[in-house]
Length: 416
Ligand SMILES: [Zn+2]
Image 1: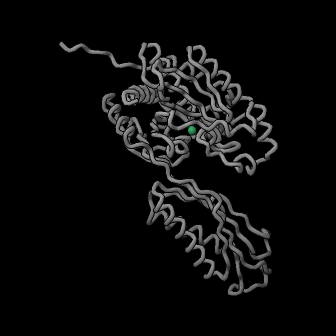
Image 2: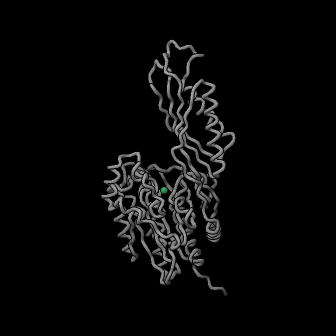
Image 3: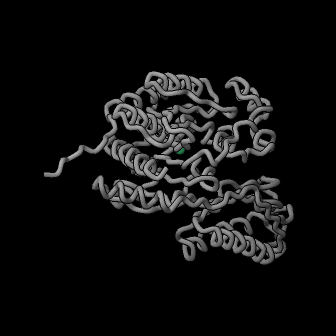
């Protein structure tokens, strides 16, 4: 007879208790959470998390960019560290699941492994990264940890620098010391992040787990069309040099191009500023804020250059000129194929359905992926709603995700 060894399972009620307690910190009237980075609520959540780490008997670790971790050390000398992560910060009036699930499930995995008396050949560290959501500076914590925080990340933020510096200082983060948060990537075995999907592909396909292959690249541009601000009453149609007409044609053609030729891509025109912006003057200037996302860096580049050519052609047609300025470019992030296969095996063993997918939203995992083997596990989001109080995931899905995380940790540790 074969002895049946019960598979190790996380303690779901204990995880739920933590989840509910954390959701109280910064809770809003509408059932959401406001815990923007470095706010009182964020600092309260960190204090709470540090207590939970100590209550479980783990070490609290923090660094010079405010990342906060719980560590279950290995008894083996020269052990490397497997990082599990998420973020405690939220957008204003955001949801209870985004970020929190990764942190709390990570902590629960450490407790489960520790209680089972399992001795792993690697340290386990559950980390909450500072300002993932970018209230001040997106991915501040993971950029700091990877040593890729640039001076302009602190000095050129669009918000008030003084307020950012004050918030950092209040959280015990000294601008002069952030460089010391950089860790030696050779000490790290890998990074795993459990997160809600934030769109509805899993729900629609009735799939339990998303195995994230990468995070799309993203670029942002300001397109400015220049015409001539003449009298709207007396300038004949053929003589008008209307910057807004050109811009409007560009927006329409941009969406048509993506729909027809790049269905996996995303573009957005999020803002239009028109000068002089009044009833009786032909628009002299129309400034558009454009964003592009794609999972393939070559295709992303292609979309970007086709849009620029399109803007130039349209400008010619409307007797305008156009100036295009790239504001930001984030490269495509690729997750580790070996870990993806481990996660798929774990899902099969757990009898959970799974599907490979890209993430269109940004995550700390994309900052870490160039430096160490990285993977993300997605669980379904109801109606795909996120960054909203209505953000919801069935508790069973959270439990499944946490168990997949647990089993993935144990298998990665075998190769440590
Ligand atoms: Zn998140």
